[in-house]
Length: 209
Image (cartoon, rainbow, N blue to C red; front, top):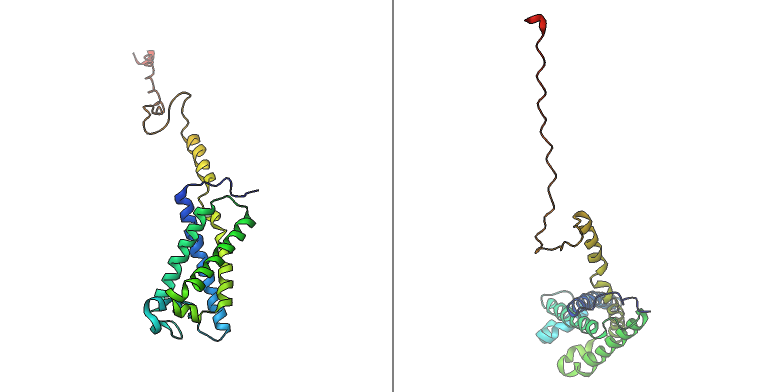
């Protein structure tokens, strides 16, 4: 059974949820690439520096973090966040949890084959030549699996539904009276207490007369 069937399918909400899932997924993917590069006695920022070569060429290939590394990080975040949004808009809530994970992995690995292998030789030859193929492929599997979590970032409709009865309970309206900003009905104010009546005068004392 699809566990996200009760979530809204507003296109903007789905797009933003996919954008967030893609952003989180690429952060985990870059963390994996950095740790695997350190295991190979390379810099943690190797993947970002290679991607920065799209803008800076050979000057971006360095050991360690540099100013050009920021452009590589930005390019990763931009492309993969948009990939997450595209996946969410395409998949919506049509698949179960396991089906969404499998589809996300196929989608991500397909993008790796297209971007790093097919187009990379022309668009980014240094990335195509120097990137760690196994680590990058595994990183895309991680990214694709995390894309399937985009329904978790959709707004929860039960919150809005819970606020409605609470507001009506605070200000109950009589039957047949419309609510909203256009209503002419106003809740009557509490009645003011009646003023005290002055007491009758006491009779004169006969001993004083």
